[in-house]
Image 1: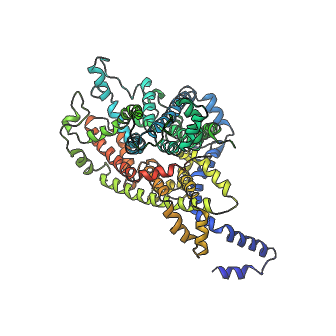
Image 2: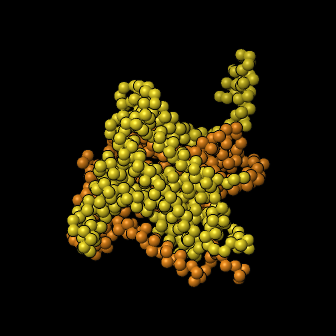
Image 3: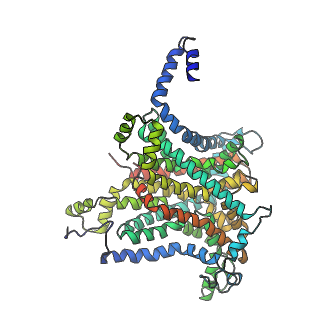
Length: 319
Length: 290
């Protein structure tokens, strides 16, 4: 088939032979690379690049999923920051509080745990690392069941019965339905299940540091563990630290669904556990204001990108 | 060496100075694993222990009733629960193998081939490490509609296949394979596919094991496709069935069954990780972002 098309195309129109041979050259040089890339690039484009482009596009429109999107300029963004009182009063503060607490704590914790694990023997290390990693294996769905049982609002719930028997409270507390407890519980649950791939990367990073680095450091006058971490450990595993940090940012912003799973409703009771992710779902799939929801999505993607930029600045290797 | 007082990483034997780490790590690990022990124990409890007051953490008379009940249940629409499990298994197996193949092929191209857009495309992929699928579920939904994939079984699989972290880890790992090896194979007359099959795949097994775990977790636990793109109950997966539990069941009797379901969700994750963990650590050493 190839030869046929070649003979057909070559002599006909002037100009074609040249572009033709250019294409041939390209195919010889880069064709096989694209052959290997094609499936990935295609799926990447359809399910990641296109949705992001569409989200940005839709964010400038009003769209209810039935009529054609109507161009509105920046109206959605202005509404989001000027008019949406739920967003300004609950969603934004909740998201800030949630991510500023969960992100750094889970990140620092995974570094410290990795650092400590690296200093014990291989056998026990593997077992302990597995135990610490195990909660992040199931990511949310299955685990929400456990938390719902433990924090159940009736007196037979585990926490409630423990507190009642020891005389701390007399009435059972509606943990997952009361505004003051929902967000902290979400934070605990998220931190608990956050020792994932970033944690493993950092563990591998600490283990891979050449032990001569430490000896040299002590000759150069390092005198305690803290200096050692700051001057040797972290600088020697910067790439892993950065990978872990990016994963921590992504996981923190992605974790939003846990509030809805725990409380069983979207919006969460008095918007107490409402994070940006839930706000998107609320507008997109419950109210069908897709243009507005896309504006929120765009803001979320920008925030994640900005946070990652910041950690990038902190850990990127300066050459 | 004897005078060296600093940190000893990866020690080969126990020393009293390690005790402090054990004292912190051991209780913490117990705390971390507690909820998982809880599902184990809860899923084995008979009815009267589920209702017991005060509630007990550990089961006294273990029984398989909850599992038996779960596996013989039909949903409102007449679908047996085993159907969801079957779907999950098929979806996950296909996703894992397809993800491995697709990412390994792309990783090979990014690592060992030269093409103009190489750096651009790879930095786009690195940027996509920060991609959060939930943020774009709306445009994704419309794309799936346009592609005619609504209610198609493949929609459970296709959106999960392009995994930026997977490609990233594989590419970093393939970078370790010396170019001379590939050149030698080329001189011996091996074509691209032979090199890919006979050299790249066998030599990247640790990274592939890691991708397998990640793809497994992603697919086994995913509820997005079943919730948004599939209306037909027969085509939904077990994670979705599980999520309907958390939305509705809050009475005590359902807890044992929920725990049994949670355990069915959890065990395969655990097994595949234990089975492959040493390879994972090997891959993660190359996970650095520069």
